[in-house]
Length: 209
Ligand code: CDP
Ligand code: CDP
Image (cartoon, rainbow, N blue to C red):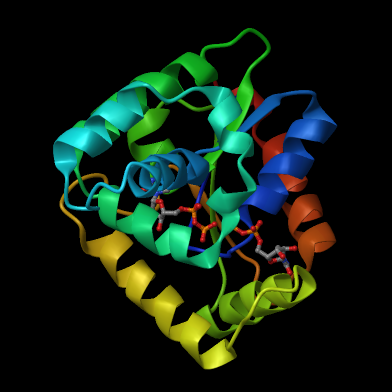
């Protein structure tokens, strides 16, 4: 079984993906980490974020163990990832990586921005997770505070809005719900309630494919 989860920043994709994968015994890939890892490699190489050739090479040489680097989770890395994610050759290289992951025996849960539309258009279940920008900023703010990192709510809200616009309006694989995705608005759902709602959607659709 392949489960595709897409949605904007801090909507709860990763949390939901982790829990569904654990519950259903599937592998899980947070594909945002791939874009973050490419951005981080450029920074380590002191290459410019506009260096498409260096970014493409970094994407082609990416390995799973690179995704464990805690620096990838930093707030600025999400912003850098959003910039390099607009380069088609980078997306092409990461598509190969994601296809290999999705093809593993037993199935997988992948979360990102274009899983249901581009990476796994034949996924068994497609979920589009949303939440109001203010709620997403609140969640990110709390998360950074918990990690002891500096955080300012208004700034996070602005960053989230800017990243939403960039991700939704880019020409290559923009953030949008697939036509056959089920949208789940988690503005008023905590992680437990979102998990239960997603599980109900998954259980309601097994006979479809
Ligand atoms: O965790 P958060 O939702 O803040 O970000 P992320 O999922 O780690 O993704 C970081 C950036 O990578 C996004 O803003 C997108 O621009 C890009 N991305 C993408 O283009 N396609 C994906 N499948 C996943 C992430
Ligand atoms: O992967 P994505 O950026 O979409 O979001 P996440 O990393 O799963 O969730 C961002 C933060 O919101 C985490 O601290 C989650 O614990 C929290 N969260 C929440 O408060 N309520 C939810 N329904 C889902 C996530």
